[in-house]
Amino acid sequence: MRPLRILQFITPSGFYGAERWILALANNLEPGQVVCDLAVSQETSDQDLTLAELYPASVGQVHRVPMAGRFDWRVVNRLAAIIREREIDIIHSHGYKSDILGFLAARKAGIRCVSTPHGFAGRVGLKMALFIRLGTYTLRHFDAVAPLSEELVADMARFGVPEHKVRFIRNGVDLEEIDQALCEMPPREPVEDRKVIGFVGQMIPRKGIPDLLSVFDQLYGRDPSLRLQLLGDGRQRPELEQQAAAQASAPGIEFLGFRNDRLALLSRFDLFVMTSSLEGIPRCMMEAMAVGVPVVAYDIPGVDQLIEHDHNGLLVPYGDQQALADSCRRLLADAEWGRRLAAAARKTIETEYSAGRMAREYSLLFAQLMGRGSVSAHMAGGAG
Image 1 (cartoon, rainbow, N blue to C red):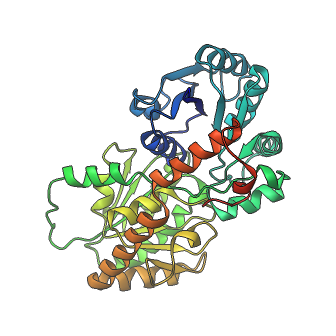
Image 2: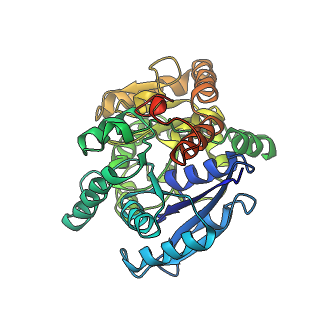
Image 3: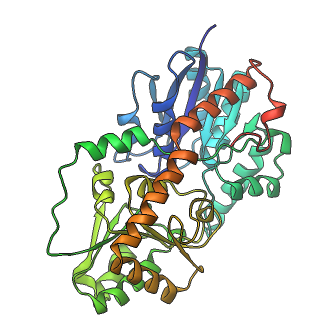
């Protein structure tokens, strides 16, 4: 039987959760069953297209689609041409812009379309809010929508996506990639007992990084040997650097930007802290759990799907900076407790959040949409 031909489509904002998700899926699909091409919008000369550079040639071709400005309707025709040339069966989109353009291209080319929502922005400007609203409306007309967290499944009901189109496929990380990276790293050499608190992700308002900086300032006041490393970039970075520079803890804070060696740096954190107000199921947190770093986070939907308090990490009430500081202090002071939490966290990822399991479920969904199996029994959360 001819392999299914899928086109992943994203308008990349860097190399963060959604982009790494696509790479993890591609690395875990069965080559004999699925040919999986990638299309990325190319909007500026300095755009971060790391995903396109790392995408495995053995899985499928990479297509860089020119896009004038932040939104360009001509992309629809360009995608439709790729679909016809490559005989694509299903386009799989990621994000509100990709959903709008991908849906229109699918309809123009007469193929199926699937969306995976990765989360939605919080407070945004009017123009962005209108585009996001159009994107969420478009989801109603997709052949299938596969949210990666239970919170996002609930969002689909709120957006009016018909229940029979919703397929809950839990997020996953590529454990083979992580374990290989860990094996290739040199042993860690302790630096005068200095402990590192870390964050990985986009520097945007919903990540709550101002809270993390404030909490670190408290911790640093008691222990000036502590370090805070922030990996990632984004539009909020200049104001975050300004906040950090004004704090007494400024000498202990490092903004490292986007790093290709993020797994190596992540594995050397003593503590991973997340202060987000809104998440799906955060990939950076899953990676921290997979590499064996203890996690402390605000208790919000999505995060609470990953972390069971005092079993595989610590949760504190959203916005409670004092509780967050206290939890960080206690965990940094008790290395054995941290190791127990980290071991349980790794087990959680192995059993529930592997990319291999995720890829198998997507392959099944793609096959069902093309009439190679029964869909109804698996829709609306039948597989997780």
